[in-house]
Image (cartoon, rainbow, N blue to C red):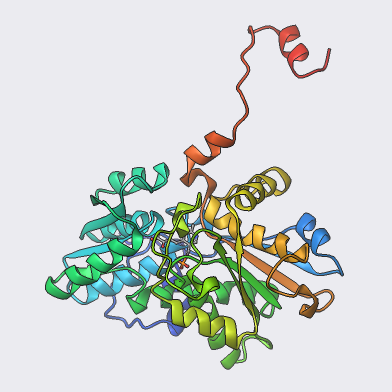
Length: 364
Ligand code: AN7
């Protein structure tokens, strides 16, 4: 017996089929990704001021814990349609987790090339558990992506990195959701930038819905890079990128030009945040709004706070009073338990006695 359609068809292809390059011949490989919460942040709104309202698009609530699932449902579905037997990607972690999960569901083999020693533990665990073949490269993400391109040229393995255009098609649906939730595009959209696919995809989504008159306005796109991995900000390839936010430890982004165009045409900006600012924003968001994100995702919050403090490359004065601002937080905090652990205070143990506990928490 087939499950009822209403329970089954919940992924982004089902929700936005008419705006995606799929046909009735496309097998839909989905884990009910997308439709993530857009959470109002009273505390960030207060910090931004002038009645402007900040919303957080919490992409960590996708099935594998990051926004990559939106692109991967498309890339894997199209790969199956085109007859692929195996998929391959280079990844700083989240793409590999998503590729491995969707490939498992589709019955495809999955190969992931990862920079050795620079993948957050949760993402590595996912790739193994979903059954991918994990290859650690003695090099960084940029080296891994170059090798994937070479392997893709000489073998029938389908590439599911964002150089596969179906990835960005899937990822653009996040903009559709924001517009549907707010009734229009926000005035400003802030998001972290690594390989630069996501900012390009959001911009594509905003432009398409604007064209279709589903929104009245277009947002300014503000991309945030880690200070040690900021090729777009510095306008040059970074040979040895370094940042605590391993997800965006990328020195030569594949979608560089698309992202630069989005930033320029939208009259947005590109800025950098330090590792200290990233970790501070991560802790602030978790302890003030109850939203735990991985370090790369906290870059968007750190970037907004830097902008609010007037230290940023983007002038917040151009955002009108009472306008909406959206920050995308791209991945779940549990992806990177080692970072959380390094931030943790000492765990104090106590005898299992009421008075000992009251003493400890200062309630005697
Ligand atoms: C949590 O998984 O590139 O600018 O290989 O995992 O579209 O690359 C991840 C990127 C932001 C940057 N936040 O997005 C990969 C990978 C998180 C991420 C980004 C990534 P893009």
